[in-house]
Length: 91
Image (cartoon, rainbow, N blue to C red; front, top):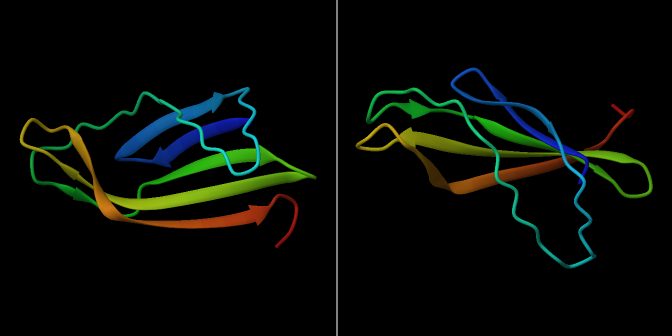
């Protein structure tokens, strides 16, 4: 894993360089600081995580999820996540 970021204006992390090796079939946790300043109950549609990977070329994985501000304004992820991948440099 080369980098990760949350580019949404209401759920944001700047691009963060990573140097994490993930073996085939394995998983990895990544912790990123997120700027989220919404009032309790506010729903943010389509914030997403972009992860750049290198495996026989450059790849980008996007994970979209709905985020709701909890009782203290903390971000709470919805239950549904949509993941897409794209080889960098292709349409």
